[in-house]
Length: 454
Ligand SMILES: [Zn+2]
Image (cartoon, rainbow, N blue to C red):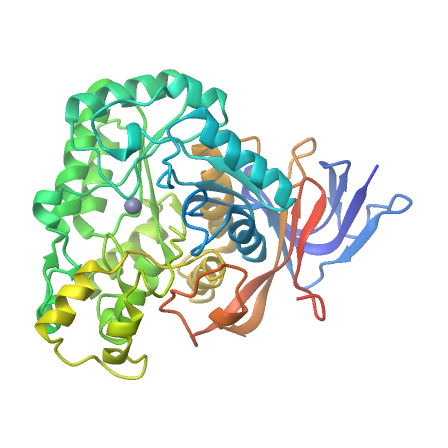
């Protein structure tokens, strides 16, 4: 029997309405008790963790990551991706289906789960594709995928264009007790745009990706969800219009949840001028006004959760050899020559996020936009609810998935020190305050970043 006693931390567990100095005792992979600080005795052979000045929270959960395995080991593997997750404070991540082959059969899910078990670190939930090979034409066998471990269904990376197919998928997935996560993009409007429609896209000479490409799809899908009374989750919301549609649908009874990524709330489209390919993603970084609306929606509860959309890419996929010279973190890029603008449009979308997500989210707390408890709701409790997991809380009897966070630890983003295999981040060199220092999964320490252990 293994046990861990975490002493004297600030325990923040919104599900049990706890926020104060407590001890947490985990025995044999389960939470045994949460007792006022100094009141829990250490069982024999227990590992004792001094958590004074730290937060002790239910393990963080990320509902949206890309681990590139199977298919792209040069970008990430399940092992490196999950180690990055553990270092970021995450105890569970949901890995999207756009691998090669796509996760549209139980065999691929079994492969992913087997690799994850072998890594002995953060838990992995395989996300099932909605359509075969993400091609939008034939449905996946949702029941078989749920039996193989899927707890979320998504064609993320691709929108589902066919309304009839989507409506049926929403009903079938809801019938299994799960939720569909939607990448909302009208490709007729986004036109493979390489940056937010506006000044930055104009300056670079690339096609703009308008807010409407996201909002029009959200409007359609919320109408379907309302009509069918099925739950729906909107991935990576980035625009003011998207949030207005979500608020409005809720007043009419829609069961809709949504997530925001740290890059969409921490940066606006001007970052693309300095970071180029490493700030290119889908949906793109938006204008200043949209970012302000995201902050307001985080504060007022419209946005339910933070998800990293961790999207590792190798330098070749980002065309850094050809484009790197145009961009420097220190100054805005010049206008791109036509051939470079074309290359920019071809760059893979996405940024890594597992090791910066918490630090960027902590900034919301330090700036008093949200309280600590709301942060835990957005990074643990609400993600657990979306995935229908017995997690997101430190109640006795729950799995001992715990993140210990030093809220005041100052650190600098140095991608070369990351566990992830990839380095594509626009946050390079940024100073952040707050970091996971210990991550516990099923009662076992899977990441120890305390002094000398990192
Ligand atoms: Zn997406």
